[in-house]
Image (cartoon, rainbow, N blue to C red; front, side, top):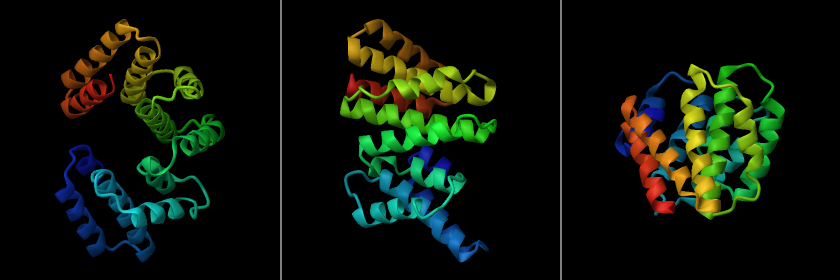
Length: 201
């Protein structure tokens, strides 16, 4: 699913849904995995939003009692279905609760949420409450496992610096990060960052 979403491959996502249906997963797991796939398809069709699917995903997220990997994936992929204020409150609460965990999977999850908050803040041009998320990221030491997340977080942090202060030197750092993604074998992600920068500059 993640690979299909990364490559914006709707047909592949639909095939994944078929694989889920034909799998030996429990009916409950099939329901959740199909809901995740539907959420990703919904995100790839912003001009044809399905409010019923969005509400079903939002409801399902908060029916899961603990913040486990399933709940994280559902929420992280569905953040656009919530208001910026709601996302800020939810993510702040999650980071405060789980940032002391040693698990690398948890750290990556928290970075993904923080990055999404920055993206949504840029899209809405609202930067009053972002310092908490940037401070969280800066306090986590960089290591090979987190390098992608730290790089993405740094891109959006510099881009916000440009947006707030019209600091053109910040855009040079953004360009360097885009080039690094392209050089290390993630050209699709580099191109997405370039499109984002051009759109919101």
